[in-house]
Image (cartoon, rainbow, N blue to C red; front, side, top):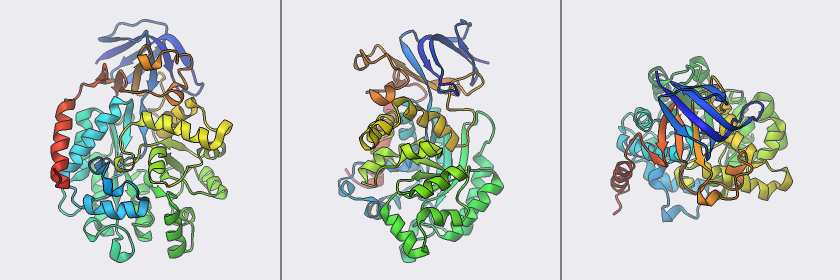
Length: 451
């Protein structure tokens, strides 16, 4: 049994049901849970003096493609939109193997946790033949960094010969996919409170999987008690595809296959009509908002203010590193705030609203009731920022909106996951940052076959 005291924090931004802001308060952790927040000082095995710091709930990333870290900033795709971008990069991704996925996952999670992210969902859907056990490699990488990790058994069954975008070598049959999905859920999925690892079923997108695969994935996920995720309404090209192939817009198509409900969340959700937003709200179907990726690929602006008005569940996400090109949810938070100020003016979410998207909203998308806010009985997932740093001078009077309005330039001071300090004084302490970077550089050179 271990204890940790966050002592005399200048601010504790709880993101709880009452939007409580604690000032000059203590936060006491026993093992992996918060036991107390308030004025009382308690003895602890480890003490962090937070008298100049703001404490925030750990950020929760609801959509990523960590394997893409090794195909970011490639000059040949910098001016492409989604469909040609995918076709070009599939020729790179078809060479993925277990070492590449392990190294890119570890690198991306290390960057995320240094910037206050404590839980990450990764959407992996590229499974080349004979590549190894890629999801097991991801879980091992997450354990080495110390991050709470949700993996997906993604998939594709439509290659170019079937009218899809990927090459034949990265698609699989429905039977292969279903069998492996059951195995991964059996081996890795932990549904318990404070779970560090979970699995979702996540076919890639309406234009790279068949209707039969979507239908069977929904059936299997619900029989196993796991969640469903895919890309929907990301681009106008996708909308044109489903209209031509099925005579339906993307959401109507997904709804016809059983892909709406409180156990479903979509990545992007840019091109929804108002009637479709009402359907999302009525069914409790969620959206992972990926502002930087949407901007880079010229996909459009997700109508987040309208979604929040209607009660659509919304969380925040980084998306793939090749369409971002990084793994920093704090950066995403500020860009999200600025993007919607530009698009919606006084109707845009506040900086604090965006923080809640990245915490409470994201937890809801993942079906987690034990993370997303700071309160007694919740998981001890949080990060600390020293308000005395140069770039925050004079910006300390609204800590609830600070991360959206001002943002943070540089890593957080501390990140604690499941009661364990993973970042201290801005440095990763669960693994050697230099070794992670050096191994990543060596692996990516082999993978891309570039000097």
